[in-house]
Image 1 (tube, one colour):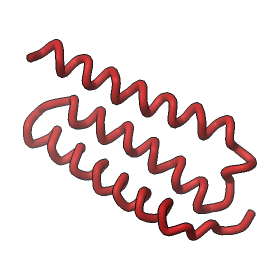
Image 2 (image 1 turned 30 degrees about the horizontal axis):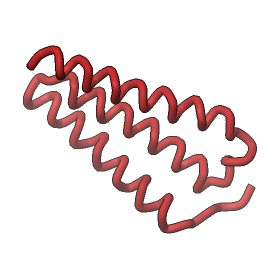
Image 3 (image 1 turned 180 degrees about the horizontal axis):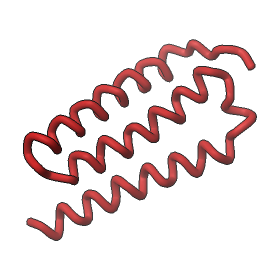
Image 4 (image 1 turned 90 degrees about the horizontal axis):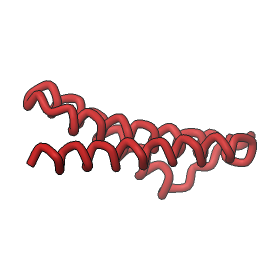
Length: 86
């Protein structure tokens, strides 16, 4: 296990953290769970980036694929539910 300090993964992780925070704060302020769901999805993406940075990518690649798939499904669900409200 070796650290992978690839700037791409680090920038993606930082942006995911920002989106999680903004999604949480936005959902509290606006009372819209769609924002929270988007934040949760990007939190999952952030976990996959963190695992890659920490050098676990090869050891848990199947789990990372599952995490990313769940994150995409959360985004799809949030957008579907938001579209139904409109």
